[in-house]
Amino acid sequence: MKIVIPGGSGQVGQILVRAFSARGHEVVVLSRSDTADARVVAWDGRTLGPWASEIDGADVVVNLAGRSVNCRYTRANLNAMMSSRVESTRVVGLAIEQAVRPPRVWLQMSTATIYAHRFDAPNDEATGRLGGDEPDVPAYWKFSVDIAEAWERTQREAKTPRTRKVALRSAMVMSPDRGGIFDVLRGLTRLGLGGAIAGGRQFISWIHDRDFVRAIELLIERDDIVGPVNLAAPSPIPQRAFMAALRSAAGTRLGLPATKWMIEIGAFFLRTDSELLMKSRRVIPGRLVGAGFSFDFPEWPDAARNLVERWTAESQKGPGRPRAASGNMES
Image (cartoon, rainbow, N blue to C red; front, side, top):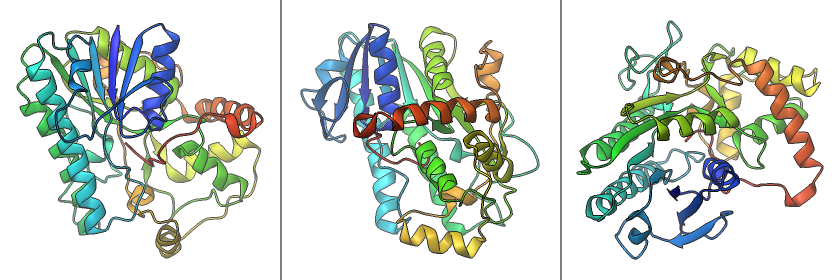
């Protein structure tokens, strides 16, 4: 197949680029940079240009474009996150609409952050509660939900009747790549900082990179699946247990806890936002399981052991190991 990946130079994009290339597919990355391990075609993520010819005749489009969420949630950054997602999705839709031979499927990145901050029950696609109106969370968290809803709405409203559309409500994709979320968490455990955050009750939803690739392949193959799909392992767990399992896999005993105010200070100096660590994302893959998908890594302790082994092996290779182009905490 010919697979076009707008925004494919980041961590998640490079996971797919490597997997698709290894399977013999033709992979084209649309990017502002040339850091991807594939043929790169320049685009600005806002306007139609020569890049649109790559979509005409392609089999699959996987749009991952959008400003990294790993930043301070200032008004300027939030606006940039919104515009980069909406504008890139809109222009991909225009390219598909104008194609003589449009792709048969358009997989559009979304986010598990669209669901409510909750502890009482997991969120699946059918019964999950969307966020934005929770009384016990900072008001600005609603903007993340607004971004996710605008992202999905833009794809949904695109006039592409010959192309099947799927919105990927992805949890954190765990891979051993440098600069990715697992690399960040592993680094914290090495410093003895991988303990509970603000009590550690908040749920962590995640997906192993190999299951992520396999899920994407299933969504490409299954012509009967349209609309939102949760890409998350079936076993989200509280942050306290999540980090304890990672420390165990890494052979690290010490895991100092952090209070909420400590996280706020740390986030300020790291130029990121505390929502990425404080929001309870309890998401389960109802539609994937219903489609017969079987996870290779359904439980975090097994996934953590595999990732630590691969992270260690990659670290021993030195500076040449794969590096994520952006440190996305969540897609």
